[in-house]
Length: 366
Image (cartoon, rainbow, N blue to C red):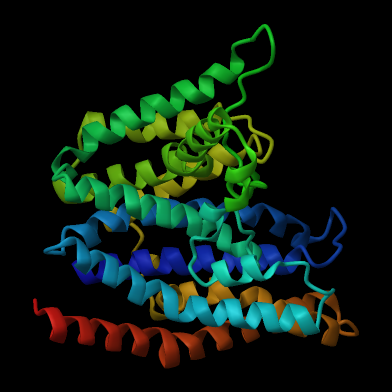
């Protein structure tokens, strides 16, 4: 039964990845308002599902480790091998196929770390912004683990959510000078800050920057903290059972998203959020057995590689497929992206993960 339910979660992750691919590919064409593919633009909201699932599965991962290094090595082995291939192919393809790149060497080099946005460098591929949030979330959870606070995570997340709500709500309170706009949107994740800025600013400006940095990247997680938190409470329901507090916190997460009116947050975003929460809740109780099939689960297995490389496929094939009807061109690109992701998953991602984990186990033991 447990493996079947995990199959459902793989399927959910796979559907989310496919929807993001369809969103990006659909956006490369002009569709009439009456064309069915016009509505692919709404699939952008499926990125929320990734963050909810991350919140859900991170506790599963953290409870399996014996020391912090287990978690760090596991995340490194999972994230970096395919990510490095993604960075290399992004730089090569965009330098030869698209317009000349304007990225500085500083940006490109730091992109290999995944921590580029923490140091003011820009992403060479637009999909990398989500990885910044993932890393910040990992740091938060690992810190709770180090301080032995995982058992209190429900109350910590409850307090965290109240702070997020107050930060969002204060934007509705008029100020004599300006509206106190919360730092929520992903554009703030990159910013124009670089290490050299520190030498050209006063101490007070540096302090202000650090406050905004911690607020945006850690407290608010780029305006998506409520998504991660909802995933944590959904995991708690799965592990420890239903409680009014857990359900109340999940509803509070959705409500907080509903009142968030920052420029990059469509008014309808919280409706997708609520829908995704319901889907995962049903999966927890085994009510989505229809998703437990190998085809959808396969998409979940290749979802990380698919997410990281689908734009490269778009850049390569879009000019070639220009004479082809748009609908057919989109389908060819999707199938090609799945083929590329499958190759990378089984020839790079999984073998590299296995080798790194095996090396770590042999060197440090269980």
